[in-house]
Image (tube, rainbow, N blue to C red):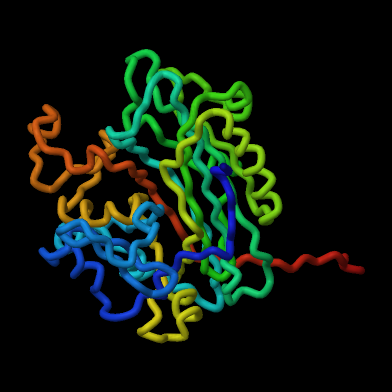
Length: 353
């Protein structure tokens, strides 16, 4: 078993969706459907009936999907990426995107066993999609490997979601992620495991004035697919530490600007590519979309968790409410973006007086 394998051509892309624009939303509201799964690469949608019979079963229910958290009170609380309209226009003068990512919190479902020996390793790869209109830059990737200490030795219990946070910009030496052309490809995976001896040597968990750090990240800016595979081969030594995949995704194709979206789709309304905008995102399994919608989820940064809309502050602080996210493993990311013009040209000459 190899937990970490990057296959950049094995794409999940919402533009394969066929049929009506709101099929996913209708699936959530349809009382005859107990659950649903996101579109697979053949353009089909799979449903689970009330009797538990699976129609067109797909593994996408267990795949990581990025959902955009709405910034409005009314309407849906989160959006599947094909429903997102990029906030950044993009232009000929600034066709590229600079991007930063912060993991605000990581919530481990109560159904996931965590004890004092439990650790996790996170992998994120993001870079230019090979279908980008950009012709000047190779399809390099910005790659992150992060260690997560899932157990609080002092409190003798699993860590709080808000304690598992990190600013990945620091891992890149405060360099932004560069996406030439604004069309990105992204993978995300988290593997739970025991702690091998070499793991602490790679991930430096530095103690701070406020206590122990529970996350440690190292970044590899602008590397090739070959270099990513070398990093994953190193991390695949976890095989001896009883690895268990919590999150795993095939690459997601995402337009980060309106220009990138229009150039890829050619303006076709039948092509529904996923998009991402600055703000907050929820990373969860495909099957958890229904829970996010039905609970009308709000994010509380102070506590690092999602909370249903109907829960009062009194009930929240006392824990006196039914938590539909109790067994949902999810991550909250804060995404920053700006349009930019990357310049691949260099002047090797010198002026002559």
